[in-house]
Amino acid sequence: MKEYDVNQRHIVDLKQTGKEIALYTDDIHVWYGQNEAIKGVSLAFEKNKITSLIGPSGCGKSTYLRSLNRMNDEINDTKVTGSIMYAETDVNQPNIDVYEMRKHIGMVFQKPNPFSKSIYDNITFALKQHGLKDKKQLDEIVETSLKQAALWDQVKDNLNKSALALSGGQQQRLCIARAIAMKPDILLLDEPASALDPISTSKVEETLINLKDDYTIIIVTHNMQQASRISDYTAFFYLGHAIEYDKTRKIFTRPKIQATEDYVSGHFG
Image (cartoon, rainbow, N blue to C red):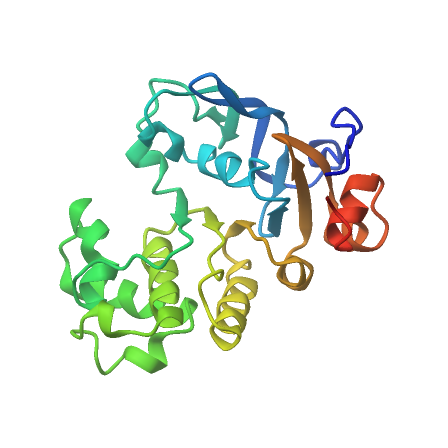
C-alpha cells in the first residue's frame, strides 16, 4: 500500500463562504476502546445539498456518519469528543435527548431493514410512538412520504401488504420513506444502494436527488460513479482523517491532494 501524508489536507470551510449550513462538526474524535477511528474531523454541510463521504474500507467514513446522530452511542466502549453543531446546539453533549434529536437527523442503513409489518405500519410506527393518532393525518403522511420516496404508485393499492414482500430496492425506498415521515432536516445514508441491482440503485439515486429540495443529505458510498452523479460536495476520508473536501466536480477533476486523485482515479493502494 502506497504511503500518503495524512497531515496534508485541503478542506473547504463552508462556514466561511456565506452558505447556509445545516450541520457542522468541530474536531470530532471517535474511539472504539483504545482504537481512534476518527481523528479530529471538522466539516460543514450546506443546507439542501447532497454530500458524499468516500474513501477506502476502514477509513472511518461510516463511523463519522454515525457520529452525526449519535448512533455510535449504541456501541459499547465508544467515546466521541468534539462538537456536532445542529440548530445552534451541540448535540454531542450528554444532556441531549438523543431520540428527540434523531427526529431531526434521520438515518437509513446499508441493508434495507423494514419492520416485519405492513407497508403502512412501517411508515406510521414511529409517528404513533411519538403520540400521533389521527388517522387522516397519518394517511396523509404515508402518502406524502411514499411519494417523496418514489414508491407510492407501486404500493398505493397494497399498503396493508407486508413490507418484507417488497423487492430489495423497494424495501430501501420504504426505509427512506420511513425516515422522512418524521420530517427530519437532515438525512444520513450509509451505503444505501450497495446491496441493490443497477436499476434499483438508479431509482434510489433519483429519489435522493429529488429529496434534496427538502432535506440535507449526507451519504457514505464506495461507488465513485454514484458520488459523482448525485452529490454537490464530496469528502475524501483516509486513516480516520478527512483529507480533502470540496465541490464534487473539483474532487473528481482537479483534486488538490495526490491521495484523493489516486483514489478517485482507481490508482489507490
